Image (cartoon, rainbow, N blue to C red; front, side):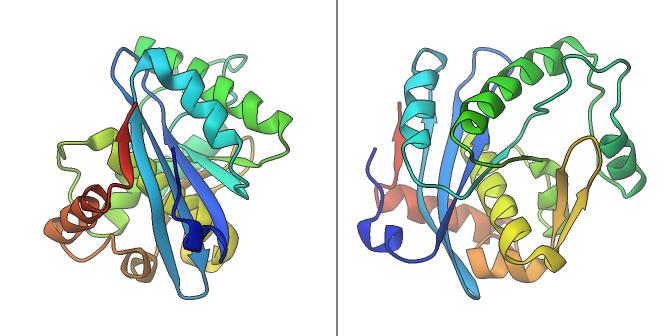
Length: 214
């Protein structure tokens, strides 16, 4: 995995991870954040058998925070919702109950990610890319490489949370859950406007060979 060297020298780095609750690939992304704009340094997908290797390599990059599209601290929680999710639901986020089999598996993976970066002293924030896409006026469409897209969205969202907090809507309390970012954030990162704009951004990442299938 090799990042854009020039981008690594400027701006803060933020990572996004889209874990899988089953046998499908995980998505990973890293963005560099500068005043008024962000740059997608790299993005890749990992098969389940290679996930740990990708996590270790991502942990070796000096990122300032990580956004994860998964609950990270629910294994001891009772009931289908935490307080932060109830708050997000009231604001229009569309979430799944935590006590469904798929979400239980996803929560285990989210906890693994949290522990890895917690040991490294890197903050981990939960994201909900489907709701964030809606806030950017982008339909929740089944993009060809959805894990890749959700990882990019998660990286952008956590970057905005720390760099431009006034532009982010997040439920706080027993977790931090980002469910909306301002449209200008999408424009700065090339992720807003119309669906084809987003697809062109992803195609550009692919063309510049900043995406890998692990």
